[in-house]
Image: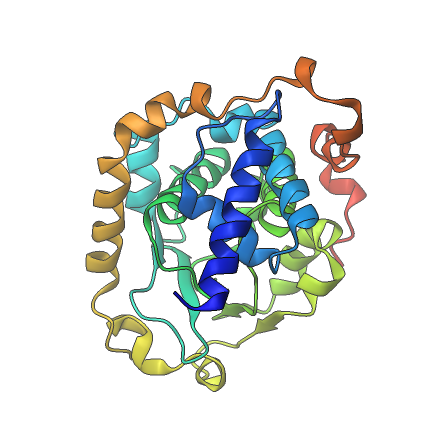
Length: 293
């Protein structure tokens, strides 16, 4: 066994031992997930411990996004009917995992922001606990072709805040790039809503691409994209269906996850309190308090 793998095993044992001694945190955590935490934290044990704690704590403080999750529920199936969320099968030469997220139609009558975020996290949990391949980084691509200004009225600011904090500070991933393709002329107004919740280092990763441009291919090899984007990865619907099937196969896990990953704040040691949790509990201001110009 190479020295690096030996060190990873040692660190994994250390983290599992630490976790077993945390009375407020869940102890039944998949090894692959713990390895993802170590990798995303560059094997800094202290940073890994803090991120794991925050990961479970923020979930505990966002029950509307992380509890009562049934892959067969009509509201979850509806999200997949009106949106496409899919991790792509092949990675970049740098070993980065790529994702595509898009609305299938500009019609938003059936779109529910909280349900969409909940479904997004269910798909993420499926990948983080089932996929043994830990990438060196992650690249989301947001296709805004069907996003209209009407979308602003659908945004739940509380859910958006929790989504932004969780994905930037709690998920065991390393963001390398963020692409917004088919960006409309009013993309600045939509970006302004997210801007208050964006960390500076993440904001620097975002690139906007105009409709019908090929600038995305400078960063993402075209061949790893779905057929609809000029690639060779297969149809969007086929890739998505494979992930829906994987998520539905974890139905029992999702239905019991509320208790499995529960946090008991009454047992939290005083030295493990995290000020970032207050950001999750605070309700964001109204749209009038956000600069949309």
